[in-house]
Length: 179
Image (cartoon, rainbow, N blue to C red; front, side, top):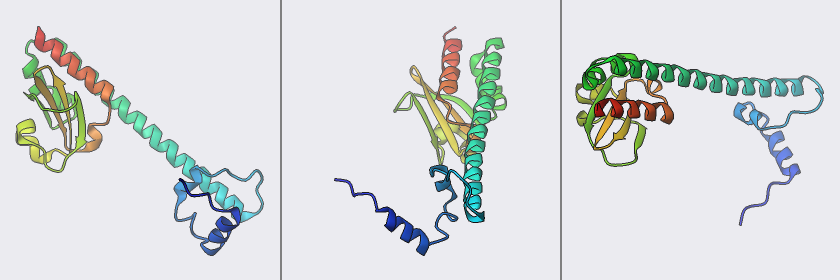
């Protein structure tokens, strides 16, 4: 059984007793309905705060979109290098880290778990990332048959949550290894 919502008078009394409540929590402006008309400076300030909160949310969405687009372009470059290469493992080890902007790109024995694991790590596995393990802050593990593609990034932003791009990268490597 859920609690009944507070009475409007109680909310009003709380806000009057805590006038800085909304100012300290600007993220709430994104969910509040603005007044229909501006009635003085204080309401105008609240409307401006709501607009600012909306702008910050949109900036975050745009930045995330740019990151996804940049990573997808890096994946495309890595796949093109793989297509041009005569040795898929050599391309993986020597070309992919620079093309993907990652510290570690390795094929390792099968790691148990889901087909794709993307996580932040405090201590990366040397078995997955070799000498780069102390630098790794985020890793992606993609199951490819009986092996796992292990990708590691120093900066978590360099390995965004892009399951489609990562899956495509894994499928391309699996196809190249099968040639």
